[in-house]
Length: 428
Image (tube, rainbow, N blue to C red; front, side):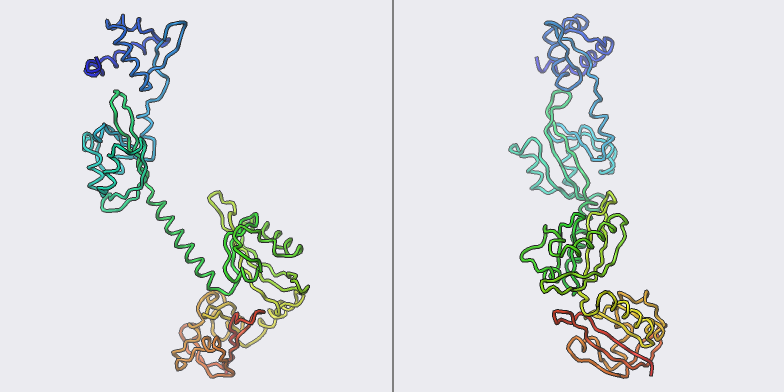
């Protein structure tokens, strides 16, 4: 009987669909059998297959079952609107149908793929024998998912592949492959990992206190300098940023974070923090917002430095700024590696370089050791060797060589470590 059903399947299924489409209110098995001149048992078997395939639905009226065409969209029509590649195969993994995304992915016409082994197609494009054996293994789950790499036009593509065993419309077992291209996601994830590594490496190298926290003040990253300055033992990740500050400092930080979160702009702030010795230390804090996909601020980078000794009730920094601006000598501060931190007006006038062109760049461009017998005044200062009124050659804008009288000095922080190098020069 089953073989008979299969031999006449397409003819009778089509006939049943035509009859039911003409009778929207539905029909009983007896009504359909009378129209098709078939036994009720045969019609019932076809209707059962159609019900399992989702082609018809059943409504019970008394003791009778009324069959009618199901008000559903065929799944195969929906597949062409999916971004993922969907390939339907028979029980031997031969291609039966593909959606448009699959044709685009495989860069082939449907006629070239129908009937071919989909596993052979994937093997040609790089599917490993081990993974192929796992797909065809009788012991695998009915739905199996794995990551694969295939080559399209010699370009490697990372795919997330799902293989599901399905009963097809004609009642014959088969399989459905769903391929999601995750190449862009993998590349973005790799770039993110590289970015995280570079950020952490640079943050650990700097002498400034660096941390990342969420808008609710939960610490997500803290470099060693920040951890030492914070004073709390153990891992700071997950702890509240404000817990190590007095009430006034915590309020100032909170107010600034709200400004940064609302404006999406960086903000700088100098404020006092009370210590256990009841004497304030001064922090120079810079906050940088990081927005997520929703454009809301998801994280904030905080870079802080202890400027105690340069600050006295808030007036010292302003006085220092005025003095540096009015000085005719060039005054430059650099990191221990030579990165320029500040560049006053005197340095601009002597070299011709405005501050915005050099801040964050290397001071070695301006004070090249090769023009001075190999003497590197920055490295000397780091080793504790300072110079006074040294005749030195600097490179001014346009590559011009210029003779100056140069002095250097190391600047120490409150812990006794060298925090920066100061260079002062004037024209002879």
